[in-house]
Image (tube, rainbow, N blue to C red; front, side, top):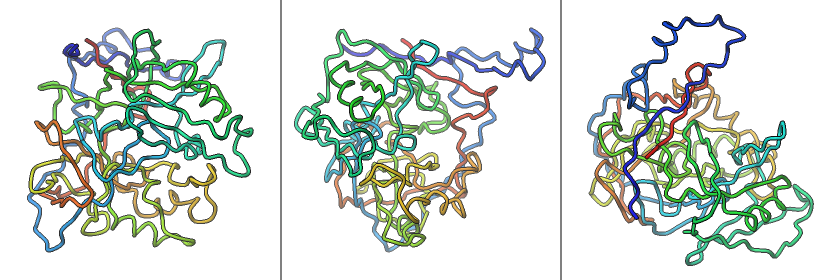
Length: 389
């Protein structure tokens, strides 16, 4: 059955500092919070997109060097030679995610499991096997949590589970909400035994998360078909460059940086270090393919050792700090260094088959780096978006 047309609505405006600010009059509240029925995903105060200009042609031919998908968010990625791409990203990418169950005040709450907060996510390897995802736990020595009760156990997760009868769970990912499906006890118990805390596996199914802020490939999603996400953070694709990776590796002693730690979807051998900051439109095999919007600001997940499930030792444990020196180049997120850029298929394109080795051309560039407008950190500005039928 085809999903019903969706509209987007703001379901909550957080203004929670009453103890520290005078109460607003009814008129002031109305003036402050009145919004049109279908507001844009970003306010008028958002920075305008940088001016785009045609890219200069060079003799260097860029090519795709790697493609990754992450069926269960935060676990190890799967490297592909060829992939089908759609408006929501690489096929099967981040259709599932894990949440931690917190029982504070006698009420169960779900908290997203992230690699930054839970480095032992790196110990879970996943692979595609026909209609299923196979998940294995690669227990280190010494173990991160109590020993695995069944080291040989492999969890088989259907890529397209039957959601009939599955309970729903509200997931808040970067202030973009969705009511996902809980996969149930067999999956929850398997992950709980290996994480060492109550864990649930959720599936997005036919539900949809709005693309927040200016990460959408169109200036006003309200005026056309609304783009949406599965459990990707802020955009369907993340692009990185091997040239930029070389810059990171040069800062480290004890070996090169592994591109997999940056968790990209598409890797290209760019023309120059961090040139991708300015890319806007990309073609593949001579055809329009991608529009790139905002840069990717990094967190401590890039400091994780994937072999131990812990913070890496030496320079590899302070990669984030080293990038802080000169890569805090997003004026909208000044405390996080940038590596990579978010993107979507060009508007009007629904599919693309991408292969390692495909030629990539930068068709247009921006004169300045984009300025991100998400996520909102201020409580008074916080907005939670959700689609509703």
